Length: 220
Image (cartoon, rainbow, N blue to C red; front, side):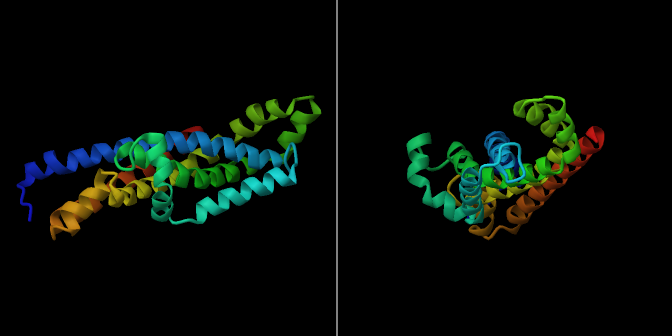
């Protein structure tokens, strides 16, 4: 059984775990944001009411997104371990976790951004079309800019969800606060570490929510 005084606990366990969680959260937010943005544009564009309706592309893309989204993260992360090892070179650690979270989080982010894009007033799109704007111009000069407040609101929820994924990833060798809570808290019967880590995760969620709300109000 490991015993640490308060400062040993902070310096040797909590801070390294917090650093790994921050890396996973920032990295996965970037990768999921990029992939999710691209997939959301495909869904919105090929939607039956989109700029370029294409039932086949929309149904295939939507089905893949729904299937990946419906899988529990830990099952998906374990099932793609061979692919993770092939791409990253290892199946454990922060970078392997970012790769797995990208697989699990991108479909969720895509659905959030698709919802944001669909909130744009159709009359704005029709007005741009009547002025001779191309599909690309309508997408990137009307739909995306007009969706920014909704994107911020939806991405705030997305980042909080990704934080939950980083905690789960800690149980399968990714490190971070999830691993700290499991290894040094639960398995070591140390309530101080376990509940302290949980409190720190809650604090991060609150800070992300506050930052997202402030940014939303400023842009709105």
